Image 1 (cartoon, rainbow, N blue to C red):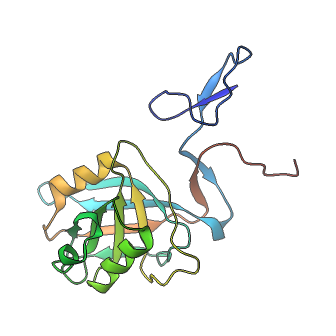
Image 2: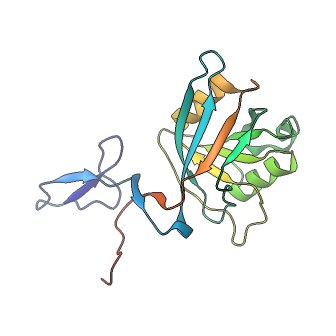
Image 3: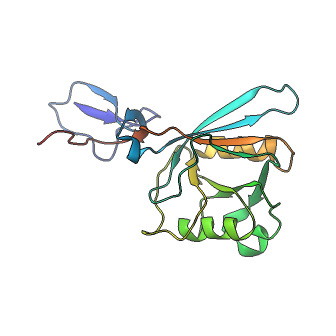
Length: 188
């Protein structure tokens, strides 16, 4: 048995020999986990032209602050910080969610720059297609949730919802996480 990613390509940890006759999804599988280990996040935006709720899936970074049970709602919307650059984060509107492209800074620093600029949460989108996970330093000094999303979703948020006063909500779906690879749940 082998594992493929969301693009149908063999994963780095997949079996690769002549005995493999079946492959299945092996990355970003929505799974149940103890509530204390939740990592699946929904990011929803109210489209200002249609009033529809647009929902994106993401992952809460390891050692990140969680959202309250009711989620975080930023009524002022979304601000952009390129590469987490300090000079660019100074333009963040207080009370917004920061959107950043994964780049040259550690995730911890990106979250800290967003928080210092007045952001209520930080969304980091991948710099290449697909999702990713990551973690902050342990223990983290960042007190706001730091979330990861795919490049595709990040670019859509950037193109359609940047600097528009529309509510954006981030909700930690406690008890669920996107997992990749194999995990031993019972004694192995």
